[in-house]
Every structure is written in C-alpha cells, then in structure tokens.
Length: 418
Image (cartoon, rainbow, N blue to C red):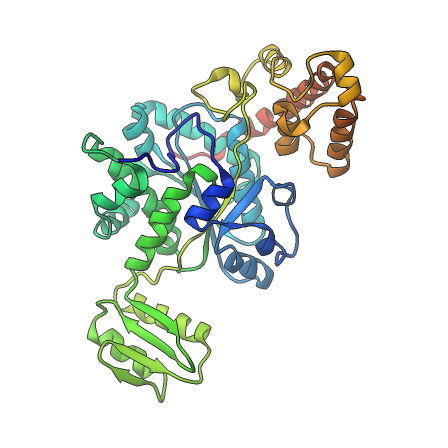
C-alpha cells in the first residue's frame, strides 16, 4: 500500500504545497483574507498559505458573530520556536472575538511516542505557559482528563472504520489500536467546542502536515448531522439522515407552507441561512449535535537551523525557550544560510534570504516591522551584509526575545491548572 501524502507524526518531511492543494482541495488563503477587517502579519507574509472554509470565519470576525478557535499540541518534548506560530494564530483569533480552546494531546503523545503520563503533564504545562505568555484567554485541557471529550470520541468512532483510517494515514495491521484511537480523540477535540458551547463555525489553525486530521473530522461532522440543508433550484430541501420522525415533523412545523415528503421537507421563500439556523436548533433539541463543519488554516513549517523541519528530535535544529544564552548564540551562529561560498561572491551576487534559516527566523518571529524586514532582505540580496554579521544581529534579537518571553512564561505559571 502506498504511503499517505502527509504523515502527521513525521519529524522530518518535506511537503509539496502546490501538489497538496491540488490533491486534497486546500485553497489558497489570499482570497479569503481579503474579507478580514485587518490582516495579521503571519497571513500577509505568506506564512499561512492555505485554508478550508475560512470565509465563514472571516464573516464571523467581520460581523461580530460567534465562532470558536481550537488547536492542540502533542507534549512529546519541550516547546520551541517551531510551535510558536500556531499559538500566535490561536491568540489572534481569540482577540478577534473567537472563543478559545487548546487541547494538550497527551493521549496521542503516550500512544504514538510512548511518552510517560508524568512527562506528558510536565511538557503540557510548558506549552500552556507559552500560550498564556502570548496572551491566550480561553479553555485548556488535557485529553486524558476530559471525560466529556472521551464520550464524544466514542460517538465519533461510530462513524469511522479502519479502512478509512488506512486510506488517510497509511495504517497497517501492525498499527496499535491506541494510535488509531488517538486519532479519533483528535476528531473529538476539533468538535469539542461545539459540544461544550453552542454550535458555531470553528477555526483550527495547524501546520500543513496536520491536514489528514482536518479531512477526517470534516467527514465525521457531516456524518453526525441529522439533516442536510440543500439549496435547490427555487427552494430549500431539508433531508433527513436517520433523524427521528418527530424531528422532521418539527422542521415542517417551523416553516409555514413547507411541504413534507418521504424523508425530506421542501421550503420556499425563506433564506437558506435562516433555515440552517432553525434546523440546527431542532436537531439539537432532538438529541443531535448540529455541527458546523470545521474550518482550518495551514501554515508552512518554520525551517530548522540545520535545514528541514524544526523538530525536537533534532536538537540542533531547534531553539527551546529555556536554553542557556550561550547555547542559543551557538545554534544561531551555526545555522544554515542562503549565502555564497566566499565573501567576494557574496558581495558580487548577494545572498538568497528565502533559503536562509536565519532570515526565515526573523520573518516568522523576530522582526515584527515589515519595513525592517524588507531592509534585512535588501541588504542580503544586494550583498551589502555578510552572513556572519546577519547571524550576530539575529542572535541578539533571539536572546532578547527569549529573555522577555521566559519572564512572561514564569508569570503565567499560576494560570495553569492540571
């Protein structure tokens, strides 16, 4: 059986973004963000590159209507700069009016990486400290401690078979059942805000390697609906998916003049959006979930200092939040750049910032001012600055950033409840 296009658990992979978009139907972010009142730097700089159904989130932000934002972190090691982008995306969406949720995926870490529960707790608290240091407000939880989540995962599991998991993830007969169930738990994580609160559009910011979880969850959300609402030519058809007869009767009663047929109700002269809202309420009244299909955004990987993906399994590639200053400076000074082989060639031809792990470190996190970043790029491309000098300046930025961030993490410790 061929390997899946994306493996969410790989620590060292390259993803062909254009091929991924084409094969799996991910859309570019640019058209959707044009509808936002303001565009955050991680979208305008091309760090967030793709989306599914983001327009409903942009609409909620623009119109000040309810929406949720959720993401999760697998506590398989200490958090580092590679994790910071998705945290910033979550915090920004909360600041735009979203109800925030963050899950610590300790079940996944235990099943997939063999991390002890004690270590999961330790690492998880560090992730939460990072989030609170960035200004996160909302609900956080560990998968293993959330009983309501476990019930939802069991319900979601009734809509997924092992063949589907094999097709999406490349599972084999040797795959542990705990690994498979950790996937279903993540499905429940994504849907959980709509159970904990009222159903509403939900945005899930993730790295592009996590799309298999999004695809699976979108399918499960649809399967768990009692009804589909279909915009036909001149009317709206509300069709039952094994809904109780009383629920279908309630749909007809909610819309005077509606006509009931075997398994569906047809409604004229009422906007589809209004019908969807009422049908969702009826579904909830009769024991259904009424889920909105979750939306997602996808950011590219922050490159490791040694090339490839920044990963805890390659210590030289990462900068964690509690590394000694000397170690941070050494890693930055050893980072792979887009410079030329000799000083003369660098002056003559310039460097290639888009291939430089240090420039991208600045682009992702260290330089928030666009004009300053553009000046760094100009100096590199023109050969005005050598890689050694750029590394020293970047190292100084990182050291200052980490000192301030560690202080905020320490101050946030009292917010963490496990």
